[in-house]
Length: 490
Image (cartoon, rainbow, N blue to C red; front, side, top):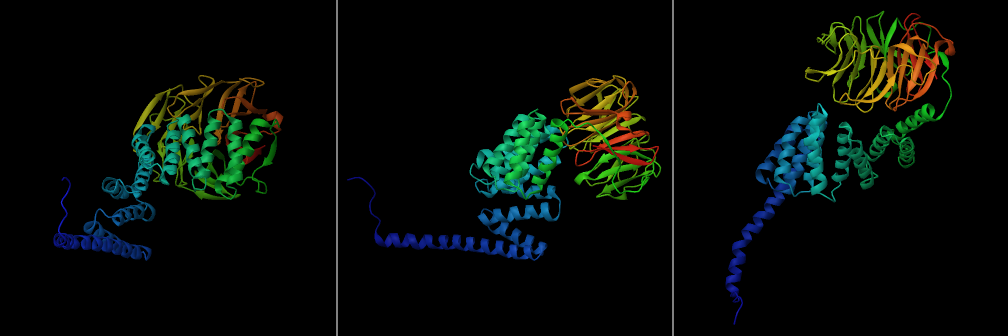
Protein backbone atom coordinates (compact mmCIF):
# COMPACT_ATOMS: atom_id res chain seq x y z
CA UNK A 1 0.00 0.00 0.00
CA UNK A 2 1.38 3.42 -0.97
CA UNK A 3 0.40 7.07 -0.24
CA UNK A 4 0.23 9.31 2.81
CA UNK A 5 -1.01 7.93 6.08
CA UNK A 6 -4.06 9.71 7.54
CA UNK A 7 -3.31 12.16 10.35
CA UNK A 8 -5.05 11.20 13.58
CA UNK A 9 -7.88 13.61 14.45
CA UNK A 10 -6.30 14.77 17.69
CA UNK A 11 -3.05 15.64 15.84
CA UNK A 12 -4.94 17.61 13.18
CA UNK A 13 -6.69 19.64 15.89
CA UNK A 14 -3.34 20.33 17.54
CA UNK A 15 -1.83 21.53 14.25
CA UNK A 16 -4.80 23.83 13.64
CA UNK A 17 -4.42 25.30 17.12
CA UNK A 18 -0.69 25.91 16.51
CA UNK A 19 -1.32 27.74 13.22
CA UNK A 20 -4.28 29.77 14.55
CA UNK A 21 -2.17 32.54 16.20
CA UNK A 22 -0.28 33.11 12.92
CA UNK A 23 -3.54 33.57 10.98
CA UNK A 24 -4.89 35.87 13.64
CA UNK A 25 -1.64 37.87 13.54
CA UNK A 26 -1.83 38.22 9.75
CA UNK A 27 -5.43 39.40 10.00
CA UNK A 28 -4.46 41.86 12.72
CA UNK A 29 -1.57 43.18 10.54
CA UNK A 30 -3.90 43.70 7.62
CA UNK A 31 -6.41 45.39 9.89
CA UNK A 32 -3.87 47.78 11.43
CA UNK A 33 -2.39 48.56 7.97
CA UNK A 34 -5.76 49.68 6.66
CA UNK A 35 -6.49 51.69 9.79
CA UNK A 36 -3.13 53.47 9.63
CA UNK A 37 -3.60 54.24 5.97
CA UNK A 38 -7.11 55.62 6.48
CA UNK A 39 -5.96 57.66 9.46
CA UNK A 40 -3.26 59.20 7.30
CA UNK A 41 -5.83 59.92 4.58
CA UNK A 42 -8.06 61.73 7.08
CA UNK A 43 -5.17 63.93 8.19
CA UNK A 44 -4.09 64.54 4.60
CA UNK A 45 -7.54 65.74 3.50
CA UNK A 46 -7.60 68.03 6.54
CA UNK A 47 -4.27 69.47 5.31
CA UNK A 48 -2.53 68.16 8.42
CA UNK A 49 0.38 66.95 6.32
CA UNK A 50 2.91 66.30 9.15
CA UNK A 51 0.34 64.10 10.92
CA UNK A 52 -0.42 62.26 7.69
CA UNK A 53 3.27 61.58 7.00
CA UNK A 54 3.89 60.44 10.58
CA UNK A 55 0.97 58.02 10.37
CA UNK A 56 2.02 56.66 6.99
CA UNK A 57 5.60 56.22 8.20
CA UNK A 58 4.24 54.13 11.08
CA UNK A 59 2.44 52.05 8.46
CA UNK A 60 5.65 51.59 6.48
CA UNK A 61 7.45 50.39 9.61
CA UNK A 62 4.67 48.10 10.83
CA UNK A 63 3.69 46.51 7.53
CA UNK A 64 6.15 47.52 4.78
CA UNK A 65 4.92 44.86 2.33
CA UNK A 66 1.18 45.47 2.61
CA UNK A 67 -0.87 46.90 -0.22
CA UNK A 68 -1.68 49.87 2.00
CA UNK A 69 2.04 50.61 2.31
CA UNK A 70 2.19 50.89 -1.49
CA UNK A 71 -0.76 53.27 -1.46
CA UNK A 72 0.88 55.38 1.25
CA UNK A 73 4.09 55.65 -0.76
CA UNK A 74 2.31 56.90 -3.87
CA UNK A 75 0.31 59.42 -1.81
CA UNK A 76 3.50 60.73 -0.20
CA UNK A 77 5.15 61.02 -3.60
CA UNK A 78 2.21 62.92 -5.05
CA UNK A 79 2.26 65.28 -2.08
CA UNK A 80 5.77 66.41 -3.01
CA UNK A 81 4.81 66.73 -6.67
CA UNK A 82 1.42 68.42 -6.38
CA UNK A 83 1.50 70.29 -3.06
CA UNK A 84 5.17 71.07 -2.42
CA UNK A 85 5.94 71.42 -6.15
CA UNK A 86 9.22 69.60 -5.52
CA UNK A 87 9.18 66.57 -7.83
CA UNK A 88 12.74 65.55 -6.97
CA UNK A 89 11.64 64.98 -3.36
CA UNK A 90 9.14 62.39 -4.61
CA UNK A 91 11.80 60.18 -6.16
CA UNK A 92 12.80 58.23 -2.99
CA UNK A 93 9.17 57.22 -2.40
CA UNK A 94 8.70 56.18 -6.02
CA UNK A 95 11.95 54.22 -6.07
CA UNK A 96 11.02 52.39 -2.85
CA UNK A 97 7.58 51.56 -4.23
CA UNK A 98 9.15 50.30 -7.45
CA UNK A 99 11.63 48.12 -5.51
CA UNK A 100 9.40 46.72 -2.76
CA UNK A 101 6.07 46.48 -4.59
CA UNK A 102 7.06 45.64 -8.15
CA UNK A 103 4.09 43.23 -8.49
CA UNK A 104 1.58 45.79 -7.30
CA UNK A 105 -0.51 47.61 -9.94
CA UNK A 106 0.45 50.84 -8.16
CA UNK A 107 4.07 50.23 -9.23
CA UNK A 108 3.05 51.09 -12.80
CA UNK A 109 1.83 54.50 -11.64
CA UNK A 110 5.05 54.97 -9.66
CA UNK A 111 7.23 54.18 -12.69
CA UNK A 112 5.17 56.52 -14.87
CA UNK A 113 5.57 59.36 -12.35
CA UNK A 114 9.28 58.65 -11.98
CA UNK A 115 9.72 58.74 -15.75
CA UNK A 116 7.88 62.07 -15.99
CA UNK A 117 10.16 63.59 -13.35
CA UNK A 118 13.27 62.32 -15.13
CA UNK A 119 11.97 63.73 -18.42
CA UNK A 120 11.37 67.14 -16.81
CA UNK A 121 14.96 67.16 -15.54
CA UNK A 122 16.41 66.51 -19.00
CA UNK A 123 18.55 69.33 -20.40
CA UNK A 124 19.20 67.82 -23.80
CA UNK A 125 17.82 64.99 -25.97
CA UNK A 126 20.34 62.41 -24.78
CA UNK A 127 19.21 62.98 -21.18
CA UNK A 128 15.89 61.31 -22.03
CA UNK A 129 17.27 57.76 -22.08
CA UNK A 130 16.44 56.87 -18.47
CA UNK A 131 12.95 58.36 -18.71
CA UNK A 132 12.27 56.46 -21.93
CA UNK A 133 13.45 53.24 -20.27
CA UNK A 134 11.03 53.80 -17.37
CA UNK A 135 8.10 54.41 -19.71
CA UNK A 136 8.98 51.28 -21.67
CA UNK A 137 9.01 49.25 -18.45
CA UNK A 138 5.46 50.37 -17.74
CA UNK A 139 4.41 49.24 -21.21
CA UNK A 140 6.24 45.90 -20.98
CA UNK A 141 5.39 44.88 -17.39
CA UNK A 142 1.82 46.07 -16.90
CA UNK A 143 -0.02 45.32 -20.13
CA UNK A 144 -3.57 45.94 -18.91
CA UNK A 145 -2.80 48.73 -16.45
CA UNK A 146 -4.38 52.17 -17.13
CA UNK A 147 -0.90 53.70 -16.76
CA UNK A 148 0.18 52.10 -20.05
CA UNK A 149 -1.71 54.65 -22.16
CA UNK A 150 -0.07 57.47 -20.20
CA UNK A 151 3.32 55.86 -20.72
CA UNK A 152 2.76 55.83 -24.49
CA UNK A 153 1.85 59.52 -24.38
CA UNK A 154 5.01 60.33 -22.42
CA UNK A 155 7.05 58.25 -24.86
CA UNK A 156 5.60 60.36 -27.66
CA UNK A 157 6.74 63.56 -25.94
CA UNK A 158 10.18 62.08 -25.30
CA UNK A 159 10.66 60.96 -28.91
CA UNK A 160 9.33 64.31 -30.10
CA UNK A 161 12.00 66.02 -28.00
CA UNK A 162 14.60 63.84 -29.70
CA UNK A 163 13.21 64.65 -33.17
CA UNK A 164 12.39 60.96 -33.61
CA UNK A 165 9.19 61.79 -35.47
CA UNK A 166 8.23 58.26 -36.55
CA UNK A 167 8.28 56.79 -33.04
CA UNK A 168 6.68 59.94 -31.60
CA UNK A 169 3.74 59.62 -33.99
CA UNK A 170 3.33 55.91 -33.25
CA UNK A 171 3.35 56.52 -29.49
CA UNK A 172 0.82 59.38 -29.60
CA UNK A 173 -1.62 57.38 -31.71
CA UNK A 174 -1.25 54.32 -29.46
CA UNK A 175 -1.91 56.45 -26.37
CA UNK A 176 -5.12 57.72 -27.95
CA UNK A 177 -6.21 54.25 -29.08
CA UNK A 178 -5.73 52.74 -25.62
CA UNK A 179 -7.63 55.43 -23.73
CA UNK A 180 -9.58 57.84 -25.97
CA UNK A 181 -11.50 59.22 -22.96
CA UNK A 182 -8.46 60.19 -20.89
CA UNK A 183 -7.46 63.77 -20.16
CA UNK A 184 -4.32 63.36 -22.26
CA UNK A 185 -6.10 61.83 -25.29
CA UNK A 186 -6.81 65.19 -26.99
CA UNK A 187 -3.24 66.26 -26.22
CA UNK A 188 -1.98 63.08 -27.91
CA UNK A 189 -4.05 63.82 -31.04
CA UNK A 190 -2.86 67.43 -31.10
CA UNK A 191 0.79 66.40 -30.88
CA UNK A 192 0.31 63.64 -33.45
CA UNK A 193 -1.11 66.21 -35.87
CA UNK A 194 1.88 68.50 -35.36
CA UNK A 195 4.27 65.62 -36.01
CA UNK A 196 2.46 64.84 -39.26
CA UNK A 197 2.91 68.44 -40.37
CA UNK A 198 6.61 68.38 -39.52
CA UNK A 199 6.88 65.24 -41.66
CA UNK A 200 5.22 67.05 -44.57
CA UNK A 201 1.75 65.48 -44.35
CA UNK A 202 -0.45 68.59 -44.24
CA UNK A 203 -3.67 66.74 -45.15
CA UNK A 204 -3.09 64.12 -42.47
CA UNK A 205 -2.40 66.89 -39.97
CA UNK A 206 -5.66 68.68 -40.79
CA UNK A 207 -7.66 65.42 -40.58
CA UNK A 208 -6.35 64.69 -37.10
CA UNK A 209 -7.07 68.22 -35.92
CA UNK A 210 -10.64 67.93 -37.23
CA UNK A 211 -11.04 64.58 -35.46
CA UNK A 212 -9.85 66.21 -32.25
CA UNK A 213 -12.44 68.98 -32.59
CA UNK A 214 -15.23 66.46 -33.25
CA UNK A 215 -14.39 64.01 -30.45
CA UNK A 216 -13.25 66.43 -27.72
CA UNK A 217 -15.16 69.62 -28.58
CA UNK A 218 -15.10 71.18 -25.11
CA UNK A 219 -11.39 70.85 -24.41
CA UNK A 220 -8.67 73.51 -24.60
CA UNK A 221 -6.99 71.32 -27.22
CA UNK A 222 -10.04 71.62 -29.48
CA UNK A 223 -9.81 75.40 -29.27
CA UNK A 224 -6.10 75.15 -30.01
CA UNK A 225 -6.82 72.88 -32.98
CA UNK A 226 -9.27 75.41 -34.42
CA UNK A 227 -6.69 78.17 -34.83
CA UNK A 228 -4.07 75.72 -36.07
CA UNK A 229 -6.45 74.63 -38.82
CA UNK A 230 -7.43 78.19 -39.69
CA UNK A 231 -3.85 79.45 -39.93
CA UNK A 232 -2.66 76.50 -42.00
CA UNK A 233 -5.56 76.82 -44.43
CA UNK A 234 -5.04 80.58 -44.67
CA UNK A 235 -1.32 80.52 -45.38
CA UNK A 236 -0.89 77.27 -47.30
CA UNK A 237 -4.15 76.68 -49.18
CA UNK A 238 -5.53 80.13 -49.91
CA UNK A 239 -3.82 82.59 -52.25
CA UNK A 240 -5.01 85.91 -50.85
CA UNK A 241 -2.22 88.48 -51.19
CA UNK A 242 -0.88 90.35 -48.20
CA UNK A 243 -2.43 93.71 -47.45
CA UNK A 244 -1.95 96.28 -44.73
CA UNK A 245 -4.74 96.74 -42.18
CA UNK A 246 -3.08 99.82 -40.71
CA UNK A 247 -2.47 100.56 -37.03
CA UNK A 248 -2.59 97.66 -34.62
CA UNK A 249 -4.25 96.87 -32.28
CA UNK A 250 -7.39 98.42 -33.72
CA UNK A 251 -8.67 101.20 -31.53
CA UNK A 252 -5.31 101.91 -29.89
CA UNK A 253 -4.19 105.50 -29.96
CA UNK A 254 -1.37 106.33 -32.35
CA UNK A 255 2.14 106.24 -30.86
CA UNK A 256 1.17 104.26 -27.76
CA UNK A 257 4.63 102.63 -27.90
CA UNK A 258 7.98 104.37 -27.63
CA UNK A 259 10.50 103.24 -30.26
CA UNK A 260 9.49 99.56 -30.59
CA UNK A 261 12.47 97.50 -31.77
CA UNK A 262 11.79 93.88 -30.74
CA UNK A 263 8.66 91.71 -30.90
CA UNK A 264 8.31 88.23 -29.37
CA UNK A 265 5.12 86.10 -29.15
CA UNK A 266 4.29 84.84 -25.68
CA UNK A 267 1.87 82.26 -24.30
CA UNK A 268 -1.88 82.56 -24.95
CA UNK A 269 -1.43 84.95 -27.85
CA UNK A 270 0.30 87.70 -25.87
CA UNK A 271 2.89 89.87 -27.60
CA UNK A 272 6.03 91.11 -25.86
CA UNK A 273 7.34 94.45 -27.11
CA UNK A 274 10.73 95.92 -26.29
CA UNK A 275 10.61 99.72 -26.35
CA UNK A 276 14.09 101.08 -26.93
CA UNK A 277 12.98 104.57 -25.93
CA UNK A 278 12.02 103.30 -22.46
CA UNK A 279 14.70 100.58 -22.01
CA UNK A 280 12.02 98.06 -21.05
CA UNK A 281 9.57 95.48 -22.32
CA UNK A 282 5.80 95.48 -22.13
CA UNK A 283 3.33 92.69 -22.70
CA UNK A 284 0.18 93.20 -24.76
CA UNK A 285 -2.68 91.06 -23.46
CA UNK A 286 -6.14 91.49 -24.99
CA UNK A 287 -5.17 94.94 -26.27
CA UNK A 288 -4.02 96.06 -22.82
CA UNK A 289 -0.29 96.65 -22.32
CA UNK A 290 1.67 96.55 -19.07
CA UNK A 291 5.40 96.72 -18.25
CA UNK A 292 7.08 93.38 -17.63
CA UNK A 293 10.58 92.64 -16.32
CA UNK A 294 13.22 95.17 -15.33
CA UNK A 295 15.00 97.96 -17.17
CA UNK A 296 17.46 96.78 -19.83
CA UNK A 297 19.36 99.21 -22.03
CA UNK A 298 20.18 98.48 -25.66
CA UNK A 299 18.53 95.04 -26.06
CA UNK A 300 19.41 93.37 -29.37
CA UNK A 301 17.21 90.29 -28.95
CA UNK A 302 14.39 89.16 -26.64
CA UNK A 303 12.90 85.81 -25.68
CA UNK A 304 10.23 84.78 -23.17
CA UNK A 305 11.12 82.40 -20.32
CA UNK A 306 8.63 79.75 -19.07
CA UNK A 307 7.74 81.99 -16.11
CA UNK A 308 6.53 84.69 -18.51
CA UNK A 309 9.43 87.09 -17.95
CA UNK A 310 11.54 88.36 -20.85
CA UNK A 311 15.24 87.58 -21.29
CA UNK A 312 17.44 89.86 -23.35
CA UNK A 313 20.66 89.84 -25.29
CA UNK A 314 22.76 92.99 -25.10
CA UNK A 315 26.36 93.85 -25.89
CA UNK A 316 27.10 93.15 -22.23
CA UNK A 317 25.62 89.64 -22.33
CA UNK A 318 22.51 87.55 -21.58
CA UNK A 319 20.22 89.34 -19.12
CA UNK A 320 17.69 87.23 -17.17
CA UNK A 321 15.39 88.07 -14.26
CA UNK A 322 18.15 89.18 -11.91
CA UNK A 323 19.26 91.87 -14.37
CA UNK A 324 22.92 90.83 -14.19
CA UNK A 325 24.43 90.26 -17.67
CA UNK A 326 26.14 86.91 -18.25
CA UNK A 327 29.02 87.36 -20.69
CA UNK A 328 28.66 86.02 -24.23
CA UNK A 329 31.29 84.77 -26.65
CA UNK A 330 30.92 87.99 -28.69
CA UNK A 331 29.57 91.49 -28.25
CA UNK A 332 27.44 91.82 -31.39
CA UNK A 333 24.39 89.58 -30.71
CA UNK A 334 21.75 89.64 -33.44
CA UNK A 335 19.31 86.96 -32.37
CA UNK A 336 18.33 84.84 -29.40
CA UNK A 337 16.07 81.80 -29.10
CA UNK A 338 15.05 79.82 -26.01
CA UNK A 339 14.30 76.20 -26.94
CA UNK A 340 12.15 73.71 -25.01
CA UNK A 341 15.21 72.30 -23.20
CA UNK A 342 15.92 75.69 -21.65
CA UNK A 343 18.91 76.25 -23.91
CA UNK A 344 19.53 79.73 -25.29
CA UNK A 345 20.74 79.96 -28.90
CA UNK A 346 22.72 83.11 -29.66
CA UNK A 347 23.64 84.45 -33.08
CA UNK A 348 26.34 87.07 -33.61
CA UNK A 349 27.07 89.22 -36.67
CA UNK A 350 30.83 89.02 -36.14
CA UNK A 351 31.45 85.48 -34.80
CA UNK A 352 31.10 82.58 -37.30
CA UNK A 353 29.30 80.32 -34.82
CA UNK A 354 26.04 79.82 -32.96
CA UNK A 355 26.50 79.77 -29.20
CA UNK A 356 24.28 77.45 -27.12
CA UNK A 357 24.01 78.22 -23.38
CA UNK A 358 22.34 75.60 -21.15
CA UNK A 359 20.51 76.10 -17.84
CA UNK A 360 23.76 75.75 -15.88
CA UNK A 361 25.40 78.52 -17.89
CA UNK A 362 27.66 76.12 -19.79
CA UNK A 363 28.10 77.07 -23.42
CA UNK A 364 29.20 75.39 -26.61
CA UNK A 365 29.75 76.71 -30.13
CA UNK A 366 28.26 75.31 -33.31
CA UNK A 367 30.27 76.27 -36.41
CA UNK A 368 28.12 78.56 -38.51
CA UNK A 369 28.24 81.61 -40.75
CA UNK A 370 27.73 84.93 -39.02
CA UNK A 371 24.08 85.51 -38.11
CA UNK A 372 21.80 88.45 -38.81
CA UNK A 373 18.58 87.10 -37.28
CA UNK A 374 17.17 84.02 -35.52
CA UNK A 375 13.67 82.68 -34.91
CA UNK A 376 12.52 79.48 -33.12
CA UNK A 377 11.12 76.47 -34.98
CA UNK A 378 8.68 73.87 -33.58
CA UNK A 379 11.21 71.06 -34.13
CA UNK A 380 13.42 72.57 -31.43
CA UNK A 381 15.78 74.20 -33.89
CA UNK A 382 15.98 77.69 -35.36
CA UNK A 383 15.58 79.66 -38.56
CA UNK A 384 18.86 81.50 -39.23
CA UNK A 385 19.48 84.34 -41.68
CA UNK A 386 23.05 85.10 -42.76
CA UNK A 387 23.76 88.11 -44.93
CA UNK A 388 27.35 86.87 -45.32
CA UNK A 389 26.11 83.63 -46.91
CA UNK A 390 23.05 85.32 -48.44
CA UNK A 391 20.74 82.54 -47.27
CA UNK A 392 18.15 81.49 -44.71
CA UNK A 393 18.50 78.04 -43.18
CA UNK A 394 16.07 76.04 -41.08
CA UNK A 395 18.18 74.10 -38.56
CA UNK A 396 17.04 71.12 -36.47
CA UNK A 397 17.56 70.73 -32.73
CA UNK A 398 21.14 69.61 -33.32
CA UNK A 399 21.95 72.61 -35.49
CA UNK A 400 21.89 70.64 -38.74
CA UNK A 401 20.40 72.37 -41.83
CA UNK A 402 17.11 70.87 -43.00
CA UNK A 403 15.99 73.62 -45.42
CA UNK A 404 18.17 76.04 -47.40
CA UNK A 405 16.73 79.20 -48.98
CA UNK A 406 19.01 81.47 -51.04
CA UNK A 407 18.17 85.16 -50.78
CA UNK A 408 15.60 86.00 -53.45
CA UNK A 409 14.56 82.42 -54.27
CA UNK A 410 10.91 82.39 -55.40
CA UNK A 411 10.61 86.19 -55.19
CA UNK A 412 10.14 88.89 -57.77
CA UNK A 413 13.63 90.19 -57.01
CA UNK A 414 16.76 89.60 -54.93
CA UNK A 415 17.33 91.30 -51.58
CA UNK A 416 20.61 91.84 -49.72
CA UNK A 417 19.71 92.01 -46.02
CA UNK A 418 17.40 90.29 -43.54
CA UNK A 419 16.54 92.84 -40.86
CA UNK A 420 14.32 90.59 -38.73
CA UNK A 421 12.83 87.10 -38.54
CA UNK A 422 9.59 85.97 -36.91
CA UNK A 423 7.98 82.54 -36.58
CA UNK A 424 4.91 80.78 -35.22
CA UNK A 425 4.30 77.43 -33.56
CA UNK A 426 3.32 75.87 -36.91
CA UNK A 427 6.68 76.30 -38.64
CA UNK A 428 5.92 79.43 -40.68
CA UNK A 429 8.77 81.95 -40.88
CA UNK A 430 8.45 85.61 -41.90
CA UNK A 431 11.21 88.10 -42.67
CA UNK A 432 11.68 91.82 -43.16
CA UNK A 433 14.13 92.14 -46.04
CA UNK A 434 15.94 95.14 -47.48
CA UNK A 435 18.40 96.20 -50.17
CA UNK A 436 18.55 95.22 -53.83
CA UNK A 437 15.48 94.64 -55.97
CA UNK A 438 13.07 93.51 -53.24
CA UNK A 439 12.34 95.43 -50.03
CA UNK A 440 9.40 94.28 -47.97
CA UNK A 441 8.05 91.11 -46.30
CA UNK A 442 8.48 87.42 -47.17
CA UNK A 443 6.61 84.48 -45.64
CA UNK A 444 7.95 80.91 -45.99
CA UNK A 445 6.29 77.61 -45.20
CA UNK A 446 7.96 74.83 -43.14
CA UNK A 447 9.46 73.41 -46.35
CA UNK A 448 10.98 76.77 -47.35
CA UNK A 449 8.47 77.53 -50.10
CA UNK A 450 7.36 81.14 -50.49
CA UNK A 451 3.77 81.49 -49.26
CA UNK A 452 3.46 85.29 -49.48
CA UNK A 453 5.58 88.19 -50.61
CA UNK A 454 4.97 91.93 -50.77
CA UNK A 455 7.10 95.02 -51.19
CA UNK A 456 6.50 98.14 -49.13
CA UNK A 457 5.20 99.84 -52.25
CA UNK A 458 2.69 97.05 -52.88
CA UNK A 459 1.53 97.31 -49.28
CA UNK A 460 1.31 101.09 -49.48
CA UNK A 461 3.28 101.67 -46.28
CA UNK A 462 6.60 103.21 -45.33
CA UNK A 463 8.67 103.46 -42.18
CA UNK A 464 11.68 101.95 -40.46
CA UNK A 465 10.42 98.41 -39.87
CA UNK A 466 12.78 96.51 -37.57
CA UNK A 467 10.78 93.62 -36.04
CA UNK A 468 8.10 91.16 -37.15
CA UNK A 469 5.88 88.68 -35.30
CA UNK A 470 2.82 86.48 -35.92
CA UNK A 471 -0.37 87.09 -34.00
CA UNK A 472 -2.67 84.28 -32.90
CA UNK A 473 -4.95 84.52 -35.94
CA UNK A 474 -2.15 84.40 -38.49
CA UNK A 475 -1.61 88.10 -39.06
CA UNK A 476 1.85 89.64 -39.25
CA UNK A 477 2.73 92.47 -36.86
CA UNK A 478 5.40 94.98 -37.89
CA UNK A 479 7.24 97.32 -35.52
CA UNK A 480 8.00 100.75 -36.99
CA UNK A 481 10.60 102.38 -34.77
CA UNK A 482 10.71 105.70 -36.59
CA UNK A 483 6.95 106.34 -36.28
CA UNK A 484 6.41 104.69 -32.87
CA UNK A 485 3.68 102.32 -34.00
CA UNK A 486 2.72 98.76 -34.86
CA UNK A 487 1.05 97.74 -38.13
CA UNK A 488 -0.77 94.53 -39.05
CA UNK A 489 -0.56 92.69 -42.35
CA UNK A 490 -3.23 90.17 -43.26
